[in-house]
Length: 89
Length: 521
Image (cartoon, rainbow over all chains, first blue to last red):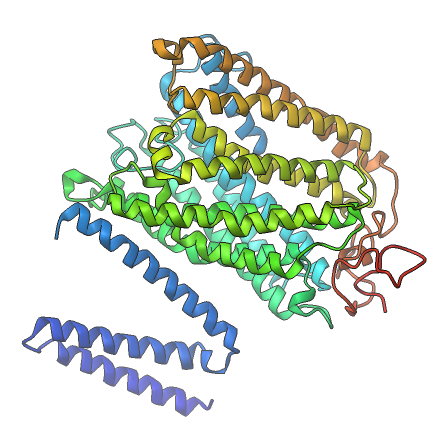
């Protein structure tokens, strides 16, 4: 990948940062939060793919990443029933 | 560190057998010291003995040799990881000498006991505990990265993934489990530090926090950690069984797949440590099921080991004896784990000596018996000499008899209702009839500790007096036995090329001998 492409992605990340800031001004808090998290996920994906060069790595590297994400989701969603039980909402 | 951990066990075990009498070699143990010794014994044995010996010690020596590599992928990272580990050890040991003494709230450092120094009177000891563990885990992460990279990138020509020795597989799966589980604990530990230093209130109910959150974060790491310790131990005995029964390892691929499944399952069993902590009771049922489910892949592995031994030409060398001892004792630990995994039984036996007996039957074979098996087996490769077999067998029998004398009575004691972490059991009338069991256990511990003296003498004496050996004294297949004993810089005289799998013994087409090296045409 050429340096100018990396600079292009950096510019795109800055644009997305601006989009996140603009979204904070939306009237609907739920919609704004969802969109901001969506943009953040997109930015993280771009960084992982191009700056961490995962786009050119073999498939099992992705398997490791997705396993890590799956483990995070397990921790999060298994705790939810317990939190509901303790705090009652 | 193992000697310090063992000495601490001796101190509090003596207090349990002979309450409020001075302990020979130390003096009187007070209640605060008792709590501190129990805490530090657990901490040292799990984090500073089991992990470094099994993963780092055996892993760093054997992994490059077994895959035909000259060194680890990142030698400097390896050295950094060693010095960070050394620093963590200094920090942990310093905690014994700061005002207030070392941490005393149990090795699981549950809040609120650990979050507010007011409960235990330990201030700096707790801070240093957290710092030491964070440093130690950082060091282990560096080691794990190195193991994975070395295995992925530096295998000898012809060494496909399904030609790797089981030990290499186990080290790598253990490293992956550690990486995926350690994050929540390090984050949780620093949140705990924030509570202690700045009263932030993550875990303190008075500040709006929830102590259960820490338990979740701790055991989300803590349970996979059990397998981080177990897998290298299983890997060690998987290398020893085929060599001393002269048979191929039964179910090579099945063991790998079932270990991967067990690794995945290990992330959804952690709440079995919390059945009576106040979690949602509906959560207990699925965790009970997954806990009992995880015994299936390990049962497959253990049956594969037994099938390997079946009708083999078994040679009872010291390392083979220790490997068989590991299998037998670990089976007791595994079976008693099913009691704990079942919610109804666990409610009764939770926090009793039954649990202490169970996890010692799991972790002692893993940490010590398998380690001894590995040391006796690879000593010729490490130093170019044999250890004395007769003294090795004396060491084996004293260790096994002593170990069972310590922990077998605890199953009965636990079922009789003896809770853990009691300073003076004679204060409870219902425990009086069983006090003699504490005496048996303590005598057993002293026997077991004394039984390590022949090992230590044998280990050092054999460095100069042991019988000199050639490269492959056990007639084994794996690549490490192709290297000189001890291996020089770069490990191999010439880069090995792998021709076959690691466990080809008693091949029907081979008439003149019963083994063929991985590197032979």
